[in-house]
Amino acid sequence: MTVDATVKSALDAAELEYRHEAAGRFFVTLPGTKKLQTNCWLIVAEHALVVEAFVCRQPDEAHEEVYRYLLRRNGRLYGVHYSIDSTGDIYLVGRIGLHAVTADELDRVLGQVLEAADGDFNTLLEIGFRTAIRRRRCLLPADGWYEWRRDGDRKQPYFMTRPDGASLALAGIWETWHDPSAEEGAPPLVTCSVLTTEAVGPLTGVHERMPLALPAATWEAWLDPDRGEVAELLVPHRELVDSLELRPVSSAVNDVRNNGAELVAPVADPGDPVALDHASDPG
Image (cartoon, rainbow, N blue to C red; front, side):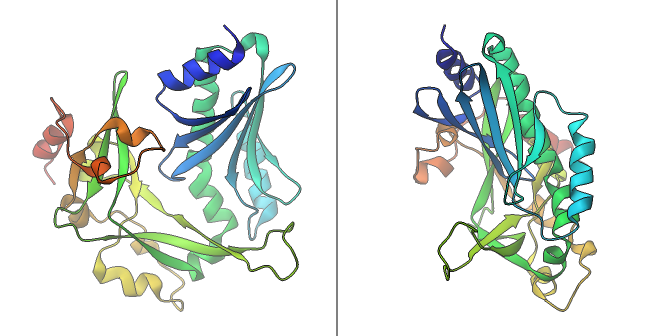
């Protein structure tokens, strides 16, 4: 089997979203929680399969502290390491010898990419973007969000939403970024990130993390630019979580090419342990 075929087979078996851009080039989307997704290139070079995943843009501040953290993390990573490009953006990069490219090895390396990019994301925000958290907060309206519960080899997608169809407000931070390669006078790119927190209540039956959804009573405080300390708001709000519908939906949502109302339509999920977890949860 060729390296291309091995990579394609492994990605299909893992039910990962990807685009086969050309021979030897795969653009893979890894779903996360803290960092809602991590985009990763897999490129077949002459002697190795190159792995490259964007993690975070150049930090605003505390650069030395960020770099020390990345160096410490590098000593504990498998198959990849943190690297900084010429503009200061942070990547995970690695190489797998072509003779060593197997489904198991690819699964292990991509698992490490996801664990590092997703697991370190909030820490990188807290170190390198403290001012944004203190001064540049925002709310992102959303009908809901998807999460996947693993049950053996099967992954069941869920859509977390309000039963009445009202929008949720997800806590985020915003920033502006100037592309150094853009023409002079080009407008800045406005970017934002959704903050996450530990899952509580019925959501623990699906995943350990969740986006930080804020109840209406906290919106004014969260958006107040003169309020620097918001630690008490950066916690899961149990009453809001308990009001959500955890709706099993079609696995068609796994394919980025699909788009339509059918992706949020409920489907049967026999033996759903989430319902059991909710029923037995003492609150």
